[in-house]
Image (cartoon, rainbow, N blue to C red; front, side, top):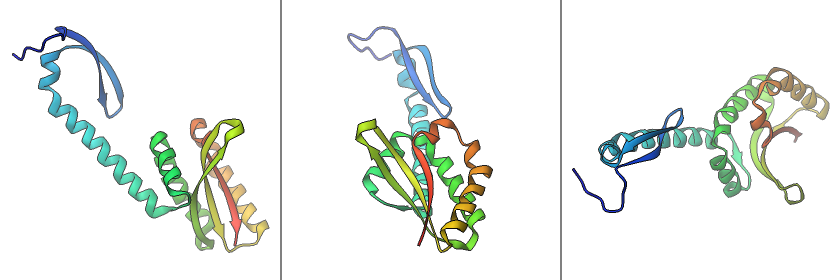
Length: 158
């Protein structure tokens, strides 16, 4: 048994699991023995995050790249909705999409930071808005509220 001065025999720990945090009372020795499992879960989660982030970079043209990356990192739960949005935009707008950008937005007066998905199309403004309305009806209205708080979607005819 490892003796560590000034550490209690038991303490409450918060262990990271793929579905969240779980509190438990564990001895220090038990936690040390489980370090490999913890590292395995942590690295598996990190790998998933990195893979999904790489998919995002292939799906979107990042504007203000460093700020976009920071917002995604701070609000990791938007990665899957962003991937889903990209797929749905491609289905709805078909071959009329020139580019899909992910842009950093901020409003210091409102203490707001977020991202905008900008769909650049080769359609007329009216046709672009019609397809955006279709997107809203089919996809946007079902998106989680916390995602909507930091994400907006707009079209720009080019």
